[in-house]
Length: 210
Image (tube, one colour):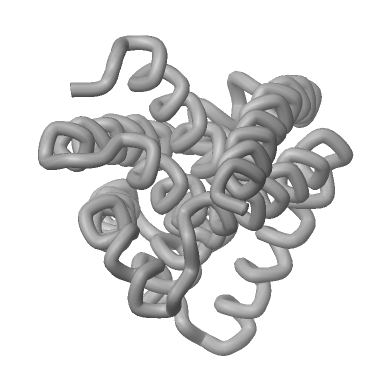
C-alpha cells in the first residue's frame, strides 16, 4: 500500500484536475429549467459515468500504455506537460472559458437529455487532464494495493464532485465570481507544482533508462 504522502498527493492531483468548484456554474448552465430532482438524477448519472471512465484507466492504465508501446517515464513527461498546461489555463482563467464553450456546444445541439454523459461526465469531469493524471498515478502506485488505493481516491473525488453538483446553486452563490477566481488560481498553482514533479521524475527515469 502506498505511503500517506503519496496517497494525499494523488488525491490532490485528481481533485484539482476535476475542479469541482469550477463545475458548479457550468452544471447550472447545462441544466436550465430542470427541477431539483432532475438535476439530482443528472448529477448522479454523470458522476457514475465519470467514475467508470477514470476507474478503468486506474486499473488498466499501464496495459493501455503497453498496447501503444509507450513507456511510463515518457508518459510522465507528456502527462506532466499536459497538466502544467491545464494549470496555466487555471491560473490565467482560460480553462473555464474553454469549458463554457463545450457547454454551449452541447446546448446548441439540443443534447440536454444526454447532458449527463456529454459534456458533463466527459469531458468536463473525466477530461484529458484527469485521465492523464490517473494514468500517471497508476504507474507510480503499482500492484493490487495501488490500484485499490487509486480507485478509492477516484471514488472520494467523484463523491465530492457529486456533492458540489447537488449543491451547485449554493456553491455558486457562496463563492461568487471573486471566490471562484481566487480558488481556481490557487488550485492551478498547486497543480503546476505537481506537474513539474511529474516531468522531473519522468526525465530522471528516461536518463537512467538511456
